[in-house]
Every structure is written in C-alpha cells, then in structure tokens.
Amino acid sequence: TAATFGLGSLGAGTARAADGGPLFFLFVAIPDGMDSSYLFDARSLSLTAAGIKANYLNEEPTPWVGTNGGVALATSLTAPLAPYRQDFSVLNGVVMAASFDGHDQNTNFMLTGNPFGGDSFIPHLNEMSGARTPLDYVQTGFLFADVANNGASMPLSPYAARSLVKKLNSSTPLDPSDPVTRHLASRYAANAQGKGRFSAASALFRDALGEAPRLAEILKKLSLPDPQPGETIDPFADELMIVGEFFKTGATRSAILTLRPENNDFLDTHGPEDARKSGEMIGSIAKRLAQVIERLKTTPFDAKSSLFDRTVFVVGSEFGRTLRQMERPIDDTGTDHNPLTNSILIGGAGIKGGLVLGEGDTRASGEVLSGAHLALDPQHLKAMGKPFDFATMRASEAKPEVYRAGEYLSFASIANTLYARFGIGEERHWAVERNGGRAPVIAPLLG
Image (cartoon, rainbow, N blue to C red):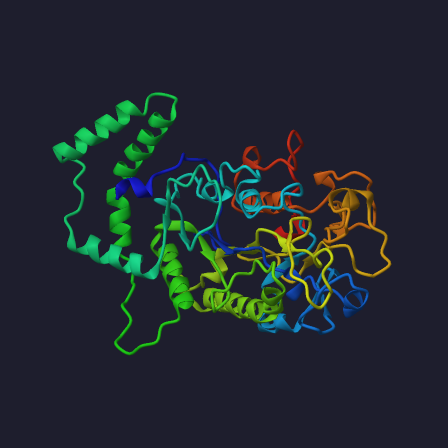
C-alpha cells in the first residue's frame, strides 16, 4: 500500500491564497471530447442553414460578454453557470495537439504538453518548499494518458476512500523502527542508486515507505460519514465532498475530477443518433459544473475562508468536435475529433473571473479561412482557433499561411499560467512547440 502513494521530487516554489494560507488545484476533466459549441463556443443557425455546422439544439446563441469586452456565443445550456459568471473566465479558440486527432495524444498534451506523454504539470504544483503534501493529487475516474510522474497520486472513489480510512483506524500504525521496515528501507535505498527504471522504481518505494506513516495519520482525520439507511446519495456530490476533505486535511494539494453526463453516456458523438443527444448530455455537464463552483463556495476551509477562496480550478476536455462529417446531411451527421479549437474555463483563487479570451473562426458562411487552417483541415470540417495577440490579449484577424503554434492560444499557455499562479519557476514552463520558446503566460487571468 505504501508504494501506491509514492513521492515525487521536492521543489522550491511557493504559492499561497490571498491570506497566506494553502492553495489548491482542481482539474475538472471532461473525457471523450466535448462539443463546446453547445456551451460557450456556439455558432449561428445561419451556418446550419448553409450546410456548414450541425446544430441539434436548433437555437440562436446569445452573446456572453466578458468584462474585458471579449465576446463568446453561448447557448441556453449555460444558464446554470450564469450566476457564477464572475467566478470564472472563458477561453475559446484554444488549440490542442494540432497534428493529432486521437483521444490519447490530446489528453497527453493537455496534461504534459506532449502528445506522446511525459511529466504532468499537476504534480509540479506540489513542488513548494516547506509545504509539500504527501499526495501530489487524487483522481476520480480514468483518463487515457501516459503520465510519467504519477507515483504520488491515488485513484479515488467514495467506497475506496471510506474503506481506507476505516482500515487505517483499525490497524496498527507502521513503525519505522521495526527491523523489517528498516530492512526494506535499506534495500530500497540501495537499489535506488542506479540510473535505470529498476532504480527509479526502488526510489519510489523508498520514499513511499518513509512517507507512509505521515500520510496514514493525515488520512485518519478524513471525515467521511457513511450514507444513512434509506438515504439517497448523489455519487458526484459525494466525490466533491471527499475531494474537499482531502484538501482540508492536507493529504493533497490537487485533484482531478472526471466529469461525465448524468447518465454516463459518452460525449464521443461520431454517430448521428449520439450527436442528437449532445444537448441533453452537455446540459447535464453544465449543471454539474455549477454544482462544483457552488460546493467550493459553500464549503468552509476555516473560520474565514471557503474552499473557493483557496482553490484554482480548470474545466476542459481533450478537444472539441468537428462542424459536421463529410458527405452527411447537416441534419443527420455525427461529429468527429477536433484539436484545432477548444473551450476551457478557469477560475477560483487569484484568477480573474468574468473575462472572455480567444475566439474560433468559421463565424460566417462566407468567411475566408487562413492558409494555416486549410493546410490542417482542407475539407473545412473543423473550426480553428484564430491567431491570438498576446500583447493585446485579443484574437487577431490575421490569416497566416503556415501554422505556427506560438501565434495561437494553446493549452501550453494555460499550463504556464497555472505554474505562475502556484509560484513554480519558469524552468518548468512548457515550450510553445518543439524547440520553441516558452508559451506566454495569460497575464490578465492573474489580475
């Protein structure tokens, strides 16, 4: 069990909430590739009439105007989030792994900045001198990703969390001075001296064994009451409550909360019949996102602050969806994968809410597309993020002939903005592309 918890390397960054207290991170990950045109990146029905963009919601979107003057087009499905519009900002036209259409590659890109995987940014947020938590993060559900530095993470479910706490409270604590424990520690330490994978694994076992007693004592403090007989429990609300408990006890600084529609349908809507259910499915997603924000705002951390005051949150799917499919009628088409544009929400502690940044193209039926777009999407089945001017923090009407990642708003800039908020040094910041410079931080989000 100790090896499951593991430990990463210590770092020297610092970050605090406004009052100097701890800062947390919650990543609400929506698997399968959500069609963001059903929330904050909608398109006019004129595009449907022109045979360009499928729209099974069949409604004209309305402007969602940011305090910075940026404008998104929003559907009625965003209504549950409207009361919280100053608590988060909308980032549209976010380019993911532009050359890769797969779920795995784009989830890898979202977590590691590399479509082939590597180190996730989330454990790095725990690299804070003198304030490191035993677990880098906990995670509900599953994401298809190749993450190399998740040794200090823990899968989380309400049943498993409650069972673990009960077992810890009924078992004898691990004694570091016990001869068997000392022998194991010495063997792990000896085997960790090399440079290969065996040595790396031994180092994780060594660190986990050393950290296990502290983590066990922290986990014993979790307050996870069992449901009462006859009580109806919302599983998602239960997961939210447990994540909050992990934060408040100091077991972890970060959590990944995977969010699916209420009926657990898949958002990977390749078939027309599946695409017709997008409104229902994404409407339930919006309600649950509102539930996340409300839970953070109403859950006390201490006598003076809520979890919302101390938690930075990001909401995102691995990519968006295509406008339509080839050779399908506009009223009988599914949608395929689209990494050329995405919609990301970000808010919480120390993040400026109410902004709208970025924009996708294909806003009008006669719009002239850039050469860069057509090179990546010659059939024009996809919308693409417009170039982004990081000096003015606005979408640009420039139409470059060649795609260069540094000219667009991408998830690399979002990750670097999170690094900046958590005080993680620039040596960790993602490159905007291979052999490129660091992706710019989105400064207005940091107030």
